Length: 183
Image (cartoon, rainbow, N blue to C red; front, side, top):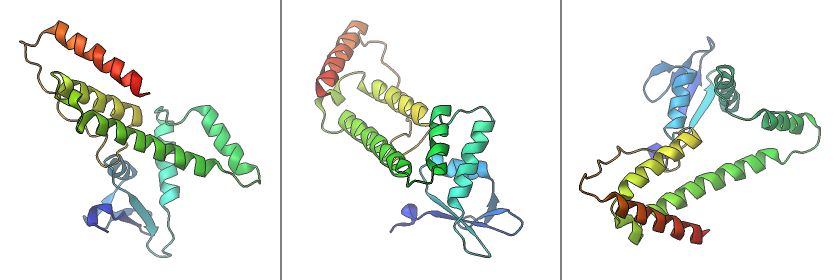
């Protein structure tokens, strides 16, 4: 396992302060949220007992974002989550959510791969600008989730003024037709 793939170990002291073991400094929930947005897995453990507190802190991060008006999950989904955990029956909701997020990440990965690898359309004028817009859209839609760097945005390349706008529109229409046929 490489260093980048190991979870970042955060230790919680008795004072409830969180300590980043890699950088030897204290961190906040916002710092931890930033690590996760950057694609890093984290593990938060209680220093004294060794208990894994990761789930508790991740839920706290979501709750804080919700309390600031940053809607993370629709109310109907939150209601369904509460119902599934309060019903006494074994719930399939956690496995369903995990599978859904896995499919979302895989779909993003395949879409970016199709846009960039061995695709003859990738060499068309204006494709770099379209890819940058697509990356920005994906990052906005997923809140920065990454899977192997998928949601990273690159600076938008400057469009040459000599490019013909009509030719770009035609190429875009052709691309949309080809993408619709892939579905």
